[in-house]
Amino acid sequence: MHENGPPAGTIASGQVLPADHHIRFEAVGGTGVPFASKDHDVQWQVVNTDRYAGYAKALRGGFYPSKPRSIRWERTEYRGIHWIEAFLIRKRTGACVGRSDRFFVVIE
Image: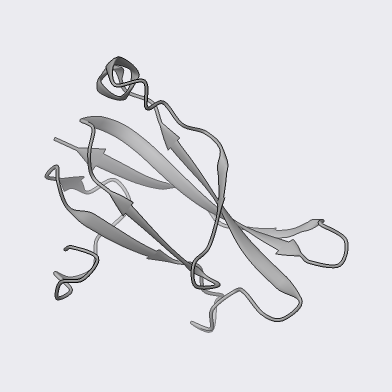
């Protein structure tokens, strides 16, 4: 899937994916409603761990905002096992009030 292209389907955590595609992540609650609201933001921690990302000086582990509120696009660029997590942050206090499980992305 590409950011401006048609959806290619749903993927599972740990599913092997080819390089050079885009993945759309969305943070939703148990009811399928997006996490973010006027009182909360979603921050994403994206972690690249493999040597290919290291060679490219693209090891990551920082936090990134959602754009729009509960969505994050990532590209399958480096071979290896990577992961992403969503954190629900209360705007008024900056406190983390929710966290997803890690979603593993395996790129061949």
